[in-house]
Length: 239
Image (cartoon, rainbow, N blue to C red):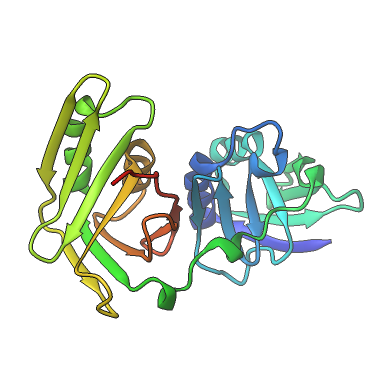
C-alpha cells in the first residue's frame, strides 16, 4: 500500500529528528522517527521534534528505525516512495530499484504527539533571543551547575533577563545576563517569569535552530515550544 514519499529536504529533517528519539528499550515505538499526520516527529519524553505538515509525507504511521535512517544518509537518493506491506512493515523504494525493509512499524502505535503541544493562545509568554548567545552562556555557566540535574534557571523580564547556574553541594554559583533577549506577556498576567531547563537538552535544540530563537511558554511546569518545531519539558525549581 502506497502511503507517501520523502525527498532530500525530508531526509535532512529526518536526520535532525533522529537526535531526539528515545533510547528506552521498554518503549520501542519511540525508538524511531515517526512519519505521521503528514509530519516528521520524534521524542524521548523530555524533548520533541516536529516538522511542518507536508502533503507528500504519510498520513498514517510509518516508523523509521535508526538503521533505516543511517541507510538513507549513506545512499542519499533524491526521492524515496514509502509503502506499507500486509504485515504492517515499511518498505522504502527509490528510482534505482533499491529497497529498504523496516519492521519497526510493527512495534505498536505511536503516541498522540499532537495532544501534548500547547496551543499558541494558551501560551501568552513570548521570549526571543539569539541562540549563539544562550549557548555561549551555557558553555560558561555549566561549570558551576549540578552535573546530575544540569539545570539552568532563566529569569525573564522586560528590563533584563538572566541565566543562573548553581551546585549547592559544592557551593558553586554563576549568573549572567542574557543579551539580546526580549520578553513579552501578551495577556499582561505576569511582569517577569522564571523557569528551570536542562541546559544540555536546550543546547542540543539550539544547535538545530536558526540563530533567532522564539519561545512561547505558559507556566514553569509546562512544556515550552521553541521555533514552532521543538517541545522542551522544564526542570522543577524550588523557590
